[in-house]
Amino acid sequence: MNRPHRPAGLLRRAHDAIHSRTAHLPPTTRGLLWSAGAGLTFSVLNALMRALALHIDPFQAQFLRYLFGLLVLLPLVARHGLAAYRPKHIGGQFTRGALHTAGLCLWFIALPRIPLADMTAIGFTGPIFIMIGAWLFFKEPMHWERWMATALGFAGVMIVVGPKLSIGQGGGGLWHLVMLGSAPLFAASFLVTKALTRYETTGTILVWQAITVTLFSLPLALPNWQAPTAWEWAGFAVCGVLGSAGHFFLTRSYRVADISATQSVKFLDLIWSAAMGWLFFSDLPTFSTLLGGVIISAATLWMARREAQRAR
Image (cartoon, rainbow, N blue to C red; front, side, top):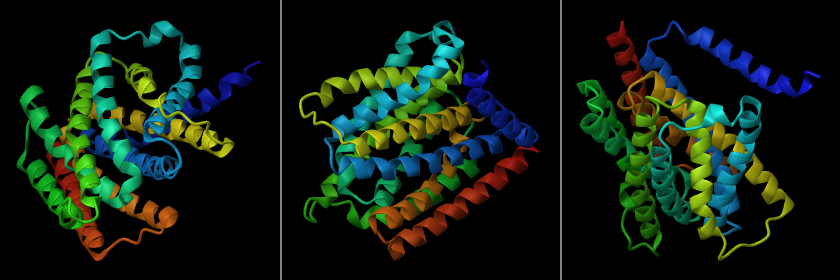
């Protein structure tokens, strides 16, 4: 009779084991670890989503990705009851969902048309918007180490994608600019997430993101709807699991540390996405990608060490 509760119990024990091994670490270091885990999870998700978006309308892919993300969470909601996930500020949840959906529209349009490494590198402009917003709206302290790590990471990003940010090369640069347009929208969404963590649980934020983005994406998906194949249904189911896990990791990082302190580790995502592009799409990393990755990794490791020293 207890069998249906075993998976949840296993997840709880795994979470407790991780917490017991990392509880002694400074909050910023734990936030960086959560953020790094989110980046790796999202890199796998992005590779799978790109493969699906090559064969299906981008807006339909967006809708199905979040629909399955919601379906993955329903057993959790059923186990704890609807009252446990009733938001304290429904307007904030829908604001966050609208911002995230707008960013996703641009992101999904450009996703099938540019390499994964370029997509990820362009997304790294987001931390600039996030740190400025966190400084302006949350009054988070901006230590010089954070600015330096972000500046070095951004320099590495520009080494990777700078030559491609033009609309002259067969229209390819246009899609890079479309992807770039999603960055400030995602930054605004993440800043709202940070505000919500002050009075909402991680699970509530996660569930309502899935609900709101699914609702906002449905009207966009219907005009060009096509019946997915069995493999595509399975792929979207996996995307639902990965997406929910990645957003859980990301929300946890915002809860335990300043949002600006966790941004430098996101530059490691370039390493993950370059590897995924090579494994699944035969996109060999260029010399500029490797050089930028080295700079980004060095900035990330230096930032983590400085934050740990500051906490001590």
